[in-house]
Length: 192
Image 1 (tube, rainbow, N blue to C red):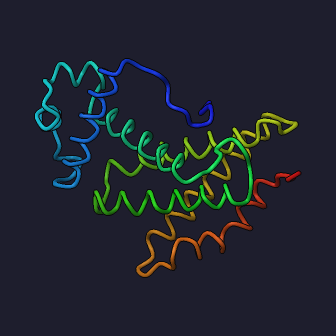
Image 2 (cartoon, rainbow, N blue to C red; image 1 turned 90 degrees about the vertical axis):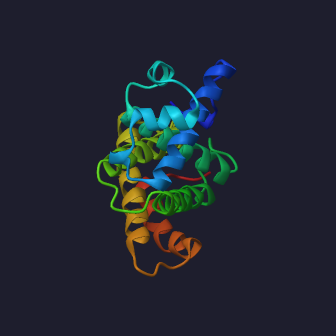
């Protein structure tokens, strides 16, 4: 579980190396397509050797998944005042965070995303589901709560994709206000 989206404590050297690889990868995504980026490109940009890269990630797809997941989790932490509590405001902030994240990813790495898109969808929906499961942890039926979280994650991601693909999108806060009642209804959470 996401445990309030808190980061796990790990060796500072591991964190620093992963951050170097993450940053190098983001820079390279701004310069060339994912398909054209090699492990050697990433290692050189991060000023580490290939062996160090492989000590942290199996391949560039694993680095991509890590980069997407960690950067989206950070976006969610930044947007939600209290990740552990369901409120309509937090749900709206979560929807807005997804919209902003997709817009940022399109700016960093313009479409078409090719191999990157399914991995991005998978990681973003996984984080959304974790947040929603955290909110629904006291729901009477845990299996139903997980199912609600997954379905709602799909709805949030789909709505954000639709907003992001419009030629001229309304401001995020207006879009969130439009879709919030529908997404909140899919959760059907009783607020005390």
